Image (cartoon, rainbow, N blue to C red; front, side, top):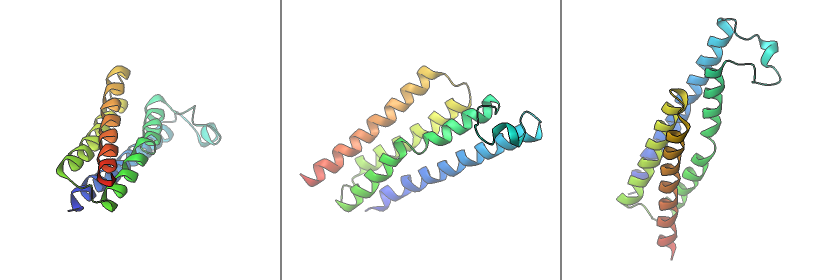
Length: 136
């Protein structure tokens, strides 16, 4: 049943919206606190305070490996690679994106963030193998 893969895809989309909201709130806080003015950031975002820049970087991250995730979800559904293993890998990827964000916007420990990112990439690779095996 392809719904097994629709749910993690919808969860990933929701997470992107959540990160976008966090970004908007942090940028709003930067303006209301007086840390930046529109003229300070109309060309470059470098003048935003660190919390807003971290949120911006994390929001950009949501359009990097998640693009591969969404492509794999669609391919998996097309070739009927919708096993529970594939669903588990999809949920694992979503979980790593959430944890990655929490680390990035919280303590921002790069080694830990990198390890979580790596687990997510491994989950994507497993999904790719699942799609490949379905078509061979």
